[in-house]
Image (cartoon, rainbow, N blue to C red):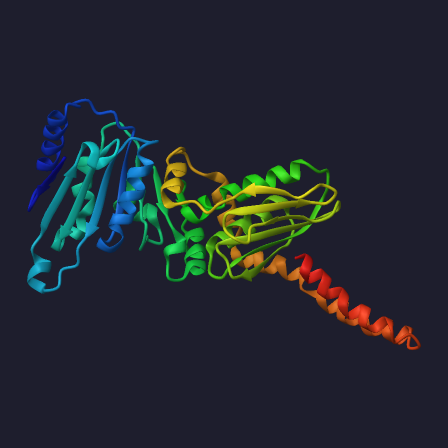
Amino acid sequence: MKTDLTDTTSSKINKALVLGRRAIGTPAVGMVLTLVIVTDEENAYDALKAANEASREHPSRTLVVIKRVSRSPRDRAKARLDAEVRLGADASTGETVVLRLYGEVVDHAQSVVLPLLLPDAPVVVWWPVNAPTDPASDPLGALAQRRVTDTYAAEQPIQELTARADRYTPGDTDLSWTRITPWRSMLAAALDQVVCEVTSAEVEGEEFNPSVELLAMWLAERLKVPVRRSKSAGPGLTSVRMETSSGPIVLDRPDGSLATLSIQGQPDRGVALKRRETAELIAEELRRLDPDDTYATALKFGIERLDEEAATLAPAPEEDAVTAPAEAVAAPAEPVEKPAAKKAPAKKAAAK
């Protein structure tokens, strides 16, 4: 059931929700939270589709706030609110209200959203794109217990990640962090299977992917070892290699679907590690509404500190380069040994 309201108010929208529930025979409100999606017209469809799929696990009232850009000074001076109320099959298991704001009301979105929040229910605000650098200070973000952003959608993801670390407030989270939950689970489980000491690590993934930085910072903070990042063609994260006292532990996912876990002294095993859709990521974030302390610790570790500690691994290739000539001088009468010395780094690279 859909109801279109033009040039309306929040009270009229609430009335339409009540009448709509009575019309479809479900007058009781059984939703557990309010999900506010702040987006633009271009990304509204995909965001709402993901929210509807996530509502099967978390029945919620979804408020989609679309701030329309006025082209002329006359339009900008005129405030108007249009709404589309969806109930029943058109809103999955919850309720959906699409709000389109025009003119001066764009700067006062919180006054439109506040009367539509479910009473005595938590509020989650999600910015699929164009998220503020400080979500907690945003007027809509101030209404929520949890604030979800996606650094991967930013124009400069790495710089955005650094800015979020400086302005972090308990309750903030990022879908780039949610994407690496299966990786963190597999790596923790792999370390539980062997008794060893991790000496260094390397995270490989596509360029400008904030999930690579977050996973590297999490490893560096938890293991207290230098972590190097390297680029790959993707998709997303492709490999994590940990050097340990018992041999390397490698989690490799070249195709974005099936990964291979390799532990020294054990047979390789296949692991289902597919790239998840946005609906699965949002559903995971809605399972917990308390502050994510692990994310905060990893985020505040800092990319600059990660670069400094990873630089301690840089002299390794130089030492190999210096050692090779020394061996050549020590054994000038054996030229046959020189090609073998050149092949060793190639084998090492192949192992990575």
